[in-house]
Image (tube, rainbow, N blue to C red; front, side, top):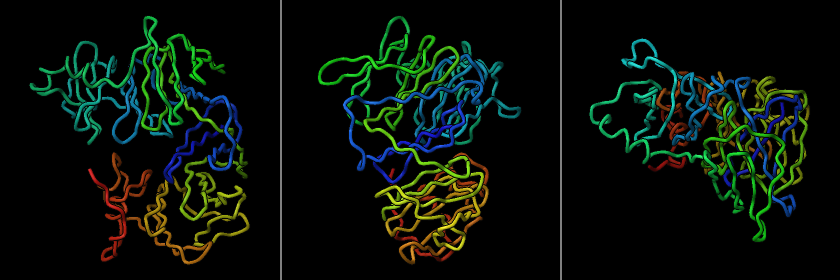
Length: 371
């Protein structure tokens, strides 16, 4: 498995896993240290039933407010969280009268509701409880306008094309037959693609600037950049779960299988050491002892590590390469969106950390979210 890491402007870095060939390397694009190339670069990831997509018949796609990608299939509603695909279908007791899992269209409505067209009928999938339900009488009166007013995707059928501008201000155009072009120095240039498509049907851009597309059998993610990449070998081989850069000039790579947190210098990318359970960075290979899935840094330079299934860790700096560690396992349910597992935080938000802090702890330094 090859792992593709994309650098974004915040401290958070997003990870996607490429399938097929087993090449245990991490690809990191560090903007400040690499020279730009004349030709923009596009990386394409392909997902199908081998990766957990529930059906080869894909009909629509969208992104919700939490950043999850959703796909309508003929075998249920499918969510991709950046790590894996999960499929949702009505359950006994939900009070939903869906008679088939063949979803033909989806639209994101206000309030965290996904409108699902199932054959000729419509149903609601509620993102608050992850359950299907029947439409109310009022909702049923507006299904046609919902379908058009809240559609995120664009069609590539019947010779149509879609043009978007990536985060580097490069303009790209994709056609239904898979031809990809970009605008460079006022000239439209075809981009050579490493994969061939059947017929791209619908596309949508996510809030990271990636383009997602579906055809009859696969999901594709187009990720663009202007920098070449440097490969860092991860030894021993392990599945990477998180890449994070702090404000002190470090970046962290966490791996699941060996429960290790590797600490690197962002200046020259050399390995500084391994974060141990004692809070010190060790020169020799040392497991942290918990599989870290996400990280967050507050304005006081305190690091927060979300693990699975070992709860939340707080790391307060006490030196150049040392931290005082506190461990929290009794996480409030409200702090973990869309999860009933109180010890498995896979995403961290400031309000999550505030609710999780120990009774009486001063959390005034944490940034507050605003709606």
